[in-house]
Length: 488
Image (cartoon, rainbow, N blue to C red; front, side):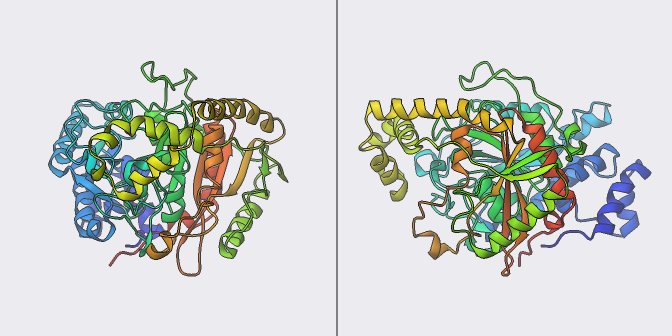
């Protein structure tokens, strides 16, 4: 699967402004590859009536039919419902109602995000027939924005792992190399987005689960500040660390999706009432005044050489775009596992007691064994340390505006390699869940074998706009986001 040539992409966007009808088909003599467009490009075509929500949805469903068997990215495909919703959005537009840039745009959801009347499984046999009665808050907001839902995406069972190989519905495959993992836990979200099966997706991130698969699959994955996006109606892994965020093909697409889901939810105890910026406005701000900090330890320790080279090249590019790039240090990271293990066990205890055999063995054992020796005081002290760290990290941003690191130490592993547990696998991503900072992974290169490499940019609490500003500026000066995987 290959991206449209730049000249053809430019024509598609230009045609939106030039015509009020479906001139694209006439211009090319055949339907263009709509599924390969970015979300923003597709939205501009819709706004100019150069395509329709139904055509975009049909293009994605066709791509799902062609490629999902190789990727195993979708657990549930809601084709008929998607087409019905697309027709509704088309009718609204014809009546002069335009909900915004997500109006009529086909997207997909990680299958731990509740959808009313559509099963939500968390990739587990425990919930294989679970059909929630209500939408998660993020789904409600996306519906208000006019999005079309294509279905539910595969993940590492109950989001408790970073490979997406452990799932009741089978492993997710990397679109760049199907014998490699997609990463996790939002593996289906990243694989589907990177392979043009949807224009964007939602994932969840507790220790890196949006950014890990985005790095491995060559997508853009953004974890906002803790409390910025509602977690109500999302199956939890760890209430104190869980985040929800978009996975898209470009930073601009990410800003559009984040704008739709961000904001205070008074029914979510973790939600914080902080005003939401217009994230798309931040994309074209100047970067010349930004001060970047590079924490070498531990984030640059033991990097694969190709990852190291790509990240250093990216930092070199960033030097030309910003006021300064200096080495910096982050405060000590508080322990994660006492909190994650205790909260995961608290959620799963009743199902472990009632139907333990419905879990994948590795997930069941991880939940039980991780929590086995954690006491109440252990949990309370670890949670206190996380809360203190979230206050302490703010001091770092008195001397720098953004923090830059590699997203992952290496590129995606093969399936056999992934069976060897790597305790360092979340080393570069989990600190930013602990600190609760807004953090994005953007493509910054490829290995010699053609596997994507990710660059991670993090900002101060609630500084999503600043993160997006630099990420977008870097993306526009590099070619990495324009490459698409080929699938046989």
